[in-house]
Image 1 (cartoon, rainbow, N blue to C red):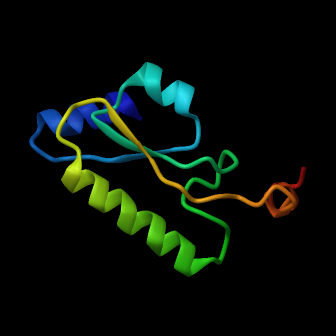
Image 2: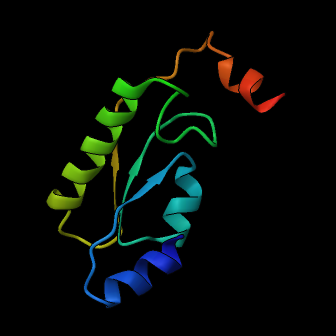
Length: 93
């Protein structure tokens, strides 16, 4: 997605990437991104948790406006509770 984001930005459209894999994001270097320490596949929050999902999206758009240096990654401070394995059940794990 970092390559796509760079191509879109070359066309004059700002982008923001949401990531749950910081090491991959650091190596790909998208123009701007936010990191959320959630299980893979749940970057925008838990299924059906509209409030959390909207907060994450709003924070990502705020980061889009505030990031000035290419390659910047902002950590969003949301926490996935350690005892919550709902993501595994939803994925059939």
